Length: 618
Image (cartoon, rainbow, N blue to C red; front, side, top):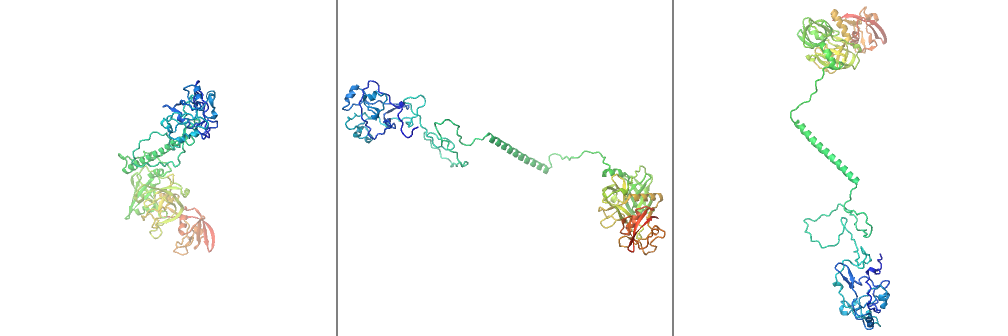
C-alpha cells in the first residue's frame, strides 16, 4: 500500500464516457485556481473532490451525476451549437487531461472537472470556491454558472467511508462496488474483545454494595488485538481467560485428589474407630460379658520340666507330724524302699524321743503311724518305718558327686504344714561346711555337714524333704537355711527363706541310712585328735591342754606323727580355715578312707598320710 501519496483513480471509479453525438466543447481553463491539489499525473485529488457530485442511494451504492446543461459563455457558444442542442457542457479537468473536442471524445477515458464557479449567492461560503479572478483566467470567457446542487450536508452519507488505499471490493469487481470497511482494532481488556459501538445501554441500577476488584491475577494477559493483522492468513485462536490444563496436569490433579481423598477417608475411619473403641472400653461393650478361655490341654508335661519332676516325685514324698515330751513339730521325708523305711532329719523326730508319736501322711492323703528305726545327731539324719501300708513307691537316689554348680533343682516339702509344696532353683555351691544344732551346750547335738547350697526356697517344714535333679532323683536332703536373724537351724526358728538353703549330699545320707537300717547306729570317721575350737588363726590347731590327751594314743593321728600344737592347713589339697571345716571334711568320708594332711609345725610345713578310724554315733 502507498500510504504516502494518493493513488491514481482506477478504472472502476472513473465516470463512464460521453455518448456519441454529444457536442464537443473546446478547452476550458481550470477554475479551481492555481492552488488546487493535483497528483503527479495532473489528476485532481480524489479525497473529497467528487463527494459533492455523488448521488447516494439507500443501499450504499451510487452513481455519478451527469454534468448539468449550462449556457456556454460568450466566445464558446458556437462550439456548443456545433455540438448540438441539449448537449451538456463538460469542462476538462486540466491541461494534463487533454483539451478541445478531440480530447473529450477521441481519447476514450476522461476525468470529471471540478464543479464550475457558481454565483456567490448560491454557495454558503464564497471563500471555499475562490474569487472570479481565480476561477476564470484573463483572456478567456467565463463559464456559465452551474445550477446549485444539493448541499453535502443535506445528502445521506454512505455506509462506508471512501477507501484511501483503493482496496478492491469483495466478490466480482464492479465500477461502483463499495470498498470494504477498514478495520481499526482497538486495545481490549485481557478477558474479552472490543465490540463495535451500538446503541447506548440502559442505565444499570445502582448496586447495593460496591464491587470489589478482582486482584487474583496481578499480571494481566497482553491485549489480544495488539498485533492483530486483518489481512494475515488465519492462525491459531488466541486464548483469553484462564489457561487450559494439559493432560499431564489433569492427571496430576486427579492423582492429588485421589491421595487427599484416601488420607481424608483414613482420618475419618481412624477417628470413628477410635471413638467406637473408647466407648466400648468405657462402657464394657454391649450385651453380656463373655470371657475368653483356653481349651483344656493334655495333663502330660516334659519329664525334665518342674511339672514333670513333681509329678513323678510327689507320690514318694510324705509329711511327718511329731508329738512328744510336750513338743510338736512338722517335717518332710521320702520313701526309701517298699518295706516302709522313710528317711528324714534327726531334729524332725527328736521331740518324739522314745515314747512320742509320729504320724506319716502320704501325698494321696492316706495316713499311717511310724516308729523310729535309728537316728544320728552328728549327721542330722533319722530313719522311721510305717507298717501295713501297700503300694509304696520308693524315691530314686542320684549321685551328689556328679552335681555341678548351676544345675537346676527342685525342692519338695511341707513348709508351715503346707504339704506337697514344690519350689525350684539351682545349685549355688558345693561342699559348703555348715553346723547346726548345739542347743544342749555339750556339743553332742551339733551336726557337721559338707552341704550343697541352693537358692530354691526352703522354709520350716521342708526339713527332711528331697532335693531333686532334672531326672527326679534325690541328690540331697534339705536340712538348714540361713535366715535373716542369723540362725541356721530349721528345728526351732520360724524365719523364712532368703535364698540360702543347705542340703546333706545324698552320698553321705545313703551310707548313714544303710547303717541306721541295718544296725540302728551310724559310724563316724575320725582322725584321733582333740581340736582347739577357740583357735582364731588360719587352719585347725591340735589342742595343747584339756581333760584328755590332745592326740589319741594308737589312733590314726598318732600313727601318722601328729603332735599337740600342730596346725592342719589342708585336707587332700583343699584349704582348711577352722576346726569346724576339718570335721566337715573328715565326716564327708567313710571310716577306712585314706587322707593326706598338710601340717605347719614351728615354722616348717610337712605332709602326712593316715587312714580314718571309726567311732559310734549317737
